[in-house]
Length: 476
Image (tube, rainbow, N blue to C red; front, side, top):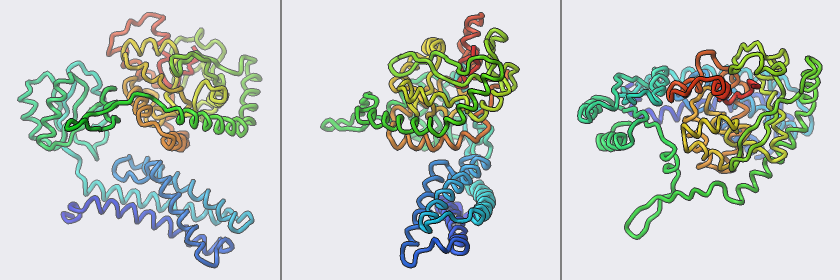
């Protein structure tokens, strides 16, 4: 085992290669035994095999199927299974094109099941080996005295296989005591506190070669994406701060028109059925409209299928929860499946939104968040989106600061390829429970913000606070 530890990166890479070989071998066996009519007589078979490998590796990379030991076991298994399903579906269509006829589906279904079993066994074994090779780092956590953004400590403590927080000290401790403690640990977690002190600790960690986990501010994210340049013998960083270029905006709009147009055509039968069901249930309005803020502070009406009773805010002024009695029977079906969001394809078609971008917030929320975080308005450098970086990597109760940072990462790293990746990633989160569940009665990002900044809890602000969520369909 000691020898393997020395070559653990190579061992992990070998694990990924073996998993790909196993899945590809099962496909090749099924291809030759059940779909031999789709075989070429020459070297064309190598092209088919290459296309299978490219698709499997691409989907696995995008969905995180290769994150051995990094992602949770169930998430790694789910990601790899989803990658396998999409690859096999596309390969089935490719084989049908080669054979020029619709091939029987059952052989594909059977060997896909075998592959999924293989994925589970291999991922379980790979994770087990990974944790044998990589012991969790012993971490010293340096927390903020006022508790600001210290939630990261609890999150890391929940992942005991990767992180071992041995000691927590607040940043108001003497600096020499902090440095002395750093020497006794393998890694340091720096929470959000005074920047001058953060810089001192970062320099010390760099000098002593300590692994460092650091909570970035909005400025840090901008600097991380700056370009390095040189003026004679002086290195400088350039933050262009231009947002999207003209070419990027044109291509992005064309993509929005194509995707939303195709989406409306495909979804129109479902949209008609949902609309009729809502109308027949209680005779109320089909759509729920709400003011939202998008690029350059422009306000527009976002469209959603109404999933709650009429005048839900008059029944109870509170945030929507998983078991909210205001949700209609129709709403209980369409909310978990995200079907209530389908009308937003029209918002995209009309140019109010983009398919990918920061989630547009209510006008009241923007006002409140901007008071707490002046840089919150930076999200409006691009159009609001139906899906986006924060929607995929965050949760409904993710703090406003973390959502802001993720939106800034998207804006700073924007590319057409990133948009395509996020669109593909959206398919993954649609089937994950934690991405569609309602809020817990006692836990929400808004509640945390209210406690942290002592926001007055009068009726008006309670109404605003109850809606400061991405689910934002409490229909108040």
